[in-house]
Length: 195
Image (tube, rainbow, N blue to C red):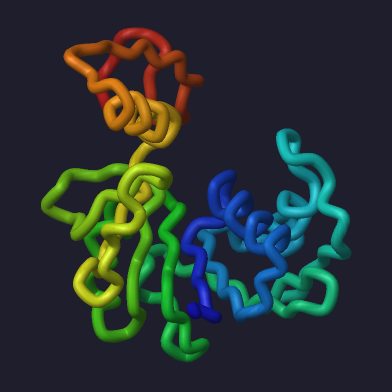
């Protein structure tokens, strides 16, 4: 059982991951790293979410921590994932929810310091030891050999479990999928270069 989790990037996905931990009564240590230097703002965003609603827990911050009820969560503001002193807190699994490519590359520097790194998107295969879609292949993870694990992308997580059931029950000869996805901050609304 893992009882120390690090969250690198405490934006929409990082905060959602923390809420899931709360809902499942996770009682291990959590350490957060986010480039936003304003802990009060981070605590506010955790407490008040436009999609998930108001967190029923007491949430506040000081200069070094966020407090959720009686839990003290150390928070750092390093630019890259390998600068964070995860081993000082005996973190076993770091979840990189930053979406920053440099953090993906630097995740390899954590080998020997943490047990595994989970990436919350689907980068090129040369960076990943295992791609996982819950409801499809999560039983194939080998935490001893799969150091960097990708939780895949939203499209695959949405249709993968359904396609898996259809393939197992009836078989699929061909298919196509149309994805309607909201605009992301790095995408252009009009013609222009890719960032």
